[in-house]
Amino acid sequence: MTTTPAGTLAAVTLNYHGCGEQAAAHLWKKGHRKIGIFYQKNFLVKANRMKGVLDYLGRQEAPVRDAWIVGFNGQGPASEAPVAAERFLKGAREIPSAFVCGNDEDALHLIQVAERHGIRVPDDLSVVGFDNSDIARLEKISLTSVDHPSFQIGEKAANILLDKIFHPEIRFVTRTIITPRLVERSSVRTLEPAAPISPGTLLQRGSE
Image 1 (tube, rainbow, N blue to C red):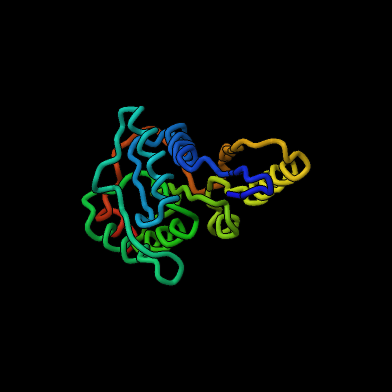
Image 2: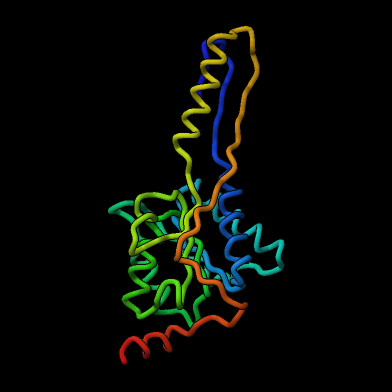
């Protein structure tokens, strides 16, 4: 948020709730009905994204199972995502066909742990991330991700600020909400709605 010389406030922000809805809608369109959430629960932005996922699936009368909402704390080197993914995959009686992750880094942690358990992405598990970061663009990962248009947000904020500088008589709050854009890659499989995959079956197949 920017305070202008005229004392007005100019805010430019991404529709984080809409980001979550868009991720869930993409998976729904691809045939997924068993969808889980993997996210940093002590970060408000990621929580808002996941709220969008829950709201969209709730409108489809396909609420996320409590067991498939995997929350953890920390980010970067302090992230508990690898431990949370390991705990979930070891203890789950069944897993969803797809996960929406709090961001691309969280998605990468989930994918790495899943592969160690013999769970292939996207053949066995589809994954969607957020931010459309350099991680998502890596050929090996090729992660479907909701874009975070930092340049566009900064440009709009600068334009609003300049407008207020050259028109100081304008004294009102300006708020711009940017609509999210999903970038589709190869981490999501198209399928007919089906039963979740048993982790035990996948582990047996991985040991063959």
